[in-house]
Length: 407
Ligand code: TTP
Ligand code: MG
Image 1 (cartoon, helix red, strand yellow):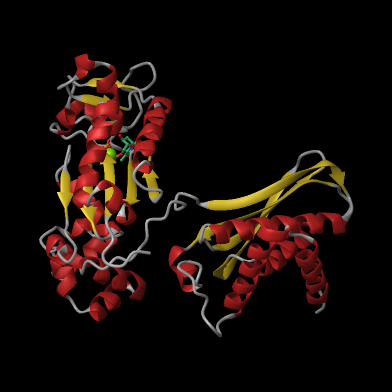
Image 2: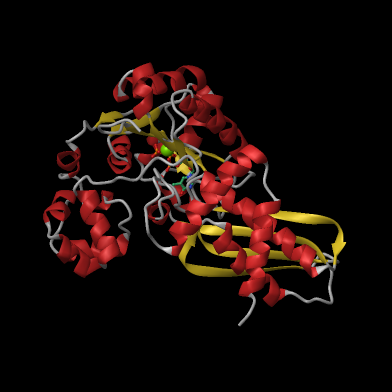
C-alpha cells in the first residue's frame, strides 16, 4: 500500500436510462423524457425509473407513479425501460473504469467507486484521471457522467452529486471537513428519514453542526454505532476501502451428484469439501460472513434450505463446517437419497473482516479462536496452492468432527 492520502473517485452517470434513450434517438435531445412507461407506451400503473433533467424541472422524480409524472409533465416523452441495452453500455463503461485501476467497486449499473491511488504515477493525479474518464465516456458512449474526487469514499460520493449533470468536483486531502460542513444533513450517508428527524430535533441543520456536536451526545441520541459513525463521517473520517467484491452479497458452492446418494458419510464428506471451497473463496476476497445456509435437494427434486446466523462473521472451514454439518443433520431424513447439497455464506461485514485481520493482515499474535483458525487456514491455502490439497486437511477435519460429535 502506498503511504499518504488515498485518491478515490465516485463516478455516476447522468440521468442514465434517459440519457441512453436520448442518445439512441437524437430527436429526443432537449426534451423532457421519462423512463418507466408500461411496455405498450401507456401511462398506467408503472413507476418512474428516471427522468431527463428537462423533465426534472417539472418535478418528475425516480420512483414516482407514472400517473403523477403525467400530471406534472404531460408533454414529456414516456418510454419503457430497456434494461439489457443499459446493461451492455454499463459493461463498456466499467471497462473504461478498469483501464485505470483494478479497484473498481460497482454500486449499480451506472455508479462506481474507483481507488486510483496507485494509478496516479501512470495516468496523472485524481482530477486528471477523472477528466480522462469523463472524456472517454463522452467519446466512446456519447454520454455524460459526474465525478467526485476525494481522499475518502464518503466525500467522493457527496462531491459527485454536487454539480450534476456533467460535474467534476475535487475535494483535496485535508479539506474534507470544511467541504462537508455547509451541506444539509440530508447528505449524511446512511441517515434515513428517522435519523435525520432526530438530528434536526437536536437543533442540527448541516453536516458541520453534526461534526461539532459531542460524539457522546450523538451516541446517546442515535445509539453508539450509528451516532459514532455519523460523527466520524461528518468530520470527514471514512477509512472504508474500495472493495471490488462488495457487490457480492453471498458466496456459495453446491454440487449435484451424478446419481442420488444415500451414503451419509459420503454426503458429509462432500459438504466438508464445499465448506472448504467457500472458506477459501471468502478469504481470498477478504470477506467473512455471519450466516451459513445449507441447501439440500432430495431425490425427486424437493428442495429445502436451512440457515444459522452466528455471533460473529466467519471465513474458515473450521467455523463453517460444524454449522453446516449440524444444519444438515437436523434437516436430514436418512430414508431419502440426496440429489444436491450446497453451502452458502451471507451477511458479509467488511468492518468485522478487517477486525479479524482478513484485510492488510499481518495476523495478530494471541487472539480469539477465529484468529487462530484463520492463520491455520491461510497456511493451508498457501501450502495447497503449491502441493495440491485434500488428504491432510480433510482427514484432520473429519477426525475433529467425529470428536466434536460427542456430547
Ligand atoms: P441514479 O444514478 O440514481 O439516477 P440517474 O442516473 O437517472 O440520474 P442522476 O443524474 O441523478 O444520477 O440511477 C441510475 C439508474 O437507475 C436510473 O437512470 C434508472 C435506475 N433507477 C430506477 O430504475 N429506479 C430508481 O428509483 C432509481 C433511483 C434509479
Ligand atoms: Mg446516475
